[in-house]
Length: 292
Image (cartoon, rainbow, N blue to C red):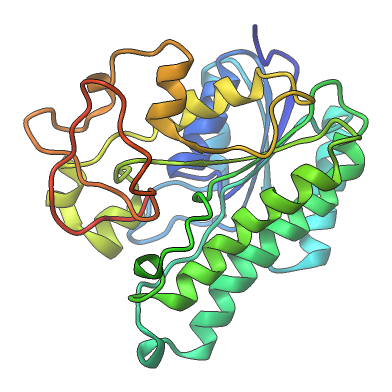
C-alpha cells in the first residue's frame, strides 16, 4: 500500500504538521502541492514553500510550491488549477492551515476573530470546495481536516470562544461533507493530536522551549494521516480521529519514538474528549493543555 503517484494539495505545508504529512507521502513517491503563504524567510518561523519543496524532493517526491492565501477565493482557485495542470488531478486535500489566538471574548479584537474564521472555517470550506470536482474524479479521494472532535463541552469554549468556533468550523465541514459526498465516494475525516505537537505555534506562541520538550513530533500526525489516506474512501469517512488511538488500531505499539524528550511528561492538547482514553502504555502529564 503506497501513495506513489498520488497528488496531495496541502495548505499550510511550509512547516510543521503540514510539511510532515507531505514528507511522509513523498517517501512513497507522491506529488505534493505546498499551498502556503510563506515565500520569504520569516524572522522567527522556519521554512518557506521553497525550502519545503526541496525537502519533499530530497526524499523522493515531486513538489509544487504555490503561494496560496486560503482567505482569498481567487488565490485558492488559481492554486488548484496550477496543481491540476502540473499533476493531472488531485487525490487528497489536507486542510492544515490554521490561525490561533487563545483569548477571551473581551480580549479578542474583531480583526483577529475574522482572521481565525477566515483561515480555519472559511478557508477549509473553500479549499475543499475547490478541490472537490477533481477529487470526485480520483480513484480513492480523501479530504483530511487537522481539526478536533466535535465535543460540545463548555470547557473548550470558555477561555477562547472565538478560536474554538473557528476550529470547530473545520470539523463541521467533516460532519456535513462526509454525508453530502458519500455517494460520490469522497472521504472526509478529521485528525487531532492527543498531545502538544512540537511546532512553531508551541514554541513561539504558547509554551516555549520547555513546552516543546513535553510534545510529540509532527511525525505522529504524518503517520496517522498516511494511514488514513490508504483506507478505502467509500468505507472510511466521517471519522474524528485522535492520532495515537487511530495508530494503535492500525497496529502501532511504539509511541515513545514520537516523543521530543522521553524524560518529560507529555503535555495534553485541547479538545480531546474525556472519554477518548489513550492507548495502553501511554500516559500524560498534568498541566494546561497546549494546542498543536
